[in-house]
Image (cartoon, rainbow, N blue to C red):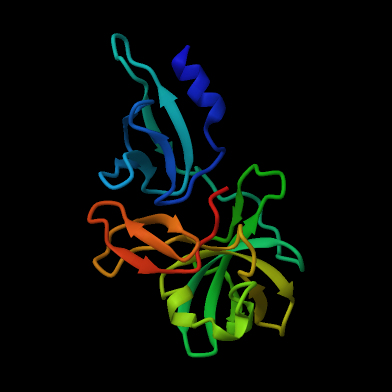
Amino acid sequence: MAASTEISQLPTIVLPGQSIVPTTAAVPGPGTLVSSVTGSIHSTILGTPKLTTEVGAALPKLSIEPPSAAAPLKLPDVGDNVYARVTKISRLEARLEVLGTEDASGGGIGLAGGSEGWGGVLRKLDLRERDRDRAEVGKCVRVGDIVRAKVISLGDQSNYFLSTAGNSLGVVVARAENGELMAPRSWKDMVGLRSGCIEERKVAKPL
């Protein structure tokens, strides 16, 4: 009964570093880790969370199943939320590779495969809603971060203009300087899942 209750509460898809359930609800399986910092089980990969109950086990096992194939691709349009990887930053903007669009129904992410991603530009003034002119690109995003952003303009032929100005927008996946996965700590910083190190980011509110 406990397992079926937790299954009904699991998200459809999870991102690396995302907190899923407390350790009182399940034991970690493939694709997950337990954070000594948060006391929760976190995903280490993109995929679908699954709970399985073994005979005699006190708690179900939580594992993450990677997607078997990319969802049908949908070209981003103005107003769409997309996931993008930061590839380069400067004082005035960040350059990104758009990896795919977010399914508006919440059913998943349409991912571009391999080098099929599209270009994106995140300008300093589009990083956050408040104190836009005081935002610092390098303190909001770093190379390698994956962000959830909104398409605000189709831009030129090679780049979409993106914005992370919104509570649900910003960094969703990040690794610390030491390489460990990080989880949101507040809207402006993230915490390492093992060491507890803290780094600044413009963080997206978890869905």
